[in-house]
Length: 491
Image (cartoon, rainbow, N blue to C red):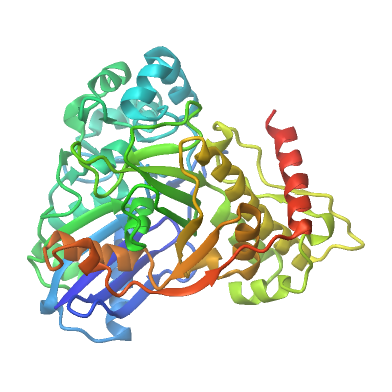
């Protein structure tokens, strides 16, 4: 008996087939090997064609089959993790009316700021736990104001994961967690936030129906099954945004638990049982996968947009054959990178900087001393420093971790990044044998009741590596230089 997990990111799609009985990964595949294209028609914009995700899922499942043959009739359930905060709008034929406006797009910042002022900051924070910012609701308002013809064609709006589930099952639905990502959910009233919809002029009929994060969400149709090379009738039984799913994959479910990821974006995600919020909305609070009104479980999320794109840009800049080669090259550079400072912000407005976009910066560059490896080291340190800066904000909401859990993937495979992060935050970092698609497969097992408890689902979760913090005066000095430069830019 197998479980299939899909992780739909803005860079790639990953598919994992899990043995449901043993909890052991049978096979995993990623498509494409290079990053999916993100279109930026104007500065600060970020769009993707939703069909690219669907075609990438087909290719990823095909690669999965070629790597390890499997009996498709043995797949019991499918779980979906997806890039958060995007806007997919479909017409009456369930076709996208325009490209998806994805998570790092900042065109709706001013719309969100205006809503925060006119609806009232106290109201937004007490009810939605966030400012509307450039989240899905504000993006939809942008379409209404700037593309009225497209808006008039919209039958339903969805998050990226909702769109993929629709392609699989023909059904349009979402979760409470999904609605909270879009700033459509009223936590105080435990229902859709009608005053916000009324303010924006958004008909509630555009929102999908609500289903549980764990449980039946539709079955694979015959056309979808044929396209994916799977059996019709397989149920989709789990859905979550990538960061709440990443936390699930690490067993981060209870108040005080902390997860992190450093892939396309850099994220620290803490679980709370209190309806708390940052008054400046620099970190954001959403419904976690196991949230209920009776037992609140809120995910407090710090996001750094520039993480993955900075790392990919570096690899191209220094012409490294792989990330491993780049990581090896920078290892010979001393901490502090000989005074070089890199600010890893260059992928849209950063929420932790109050929606400012200072851009990426390389500072103190000396052409006589610094090499590509110096730049790479300073950039990995700079990303770790951005985590530290954001975690200091998280502490103001009550999250003060002594341990960070992460998958042994992406930038956590960089010794410079993970050792700098441990040193500058004073936290132990535990790296586990998991990733988003594996977590989605386990989530599918929970939704299909293959697993009766979370403990049973994550019985095979193992620590692969532990990084203990080591004080380094050069790292402390480098962080002080970094923070001083950042404060100069955002004042």
